[in-house]
Image (cartoon, rainbow, N blue to C red; front, top):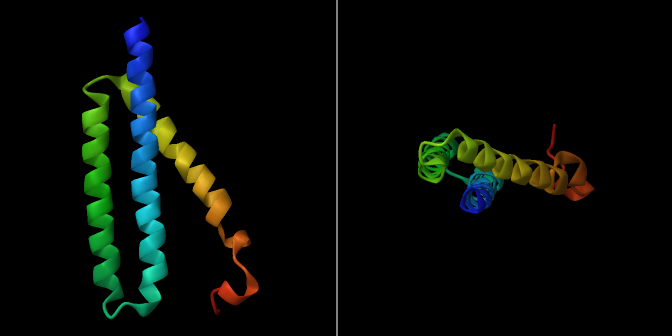
Length: 100
């Protein structure tokens, strides 16, 4: 029983790392788009790399167990909520607002 708790904790921690990788990479991509010579290639390439790394990480962390997959997803979603609250559109200063 104790080892399964550790395995779930490891999966949740790994999901947190995958969330930082995915959403941090997304943030870096979005901030680099305005200065990119080929924004579509940058966005598509970033998406493919982030998705491939995230899916591979989930596959390795879950190791065929649905409990680990859920723990991993919870860690991933925690990062999403934290980064959205920290870096969301309402947190931009007036000089950083997107021109409409």
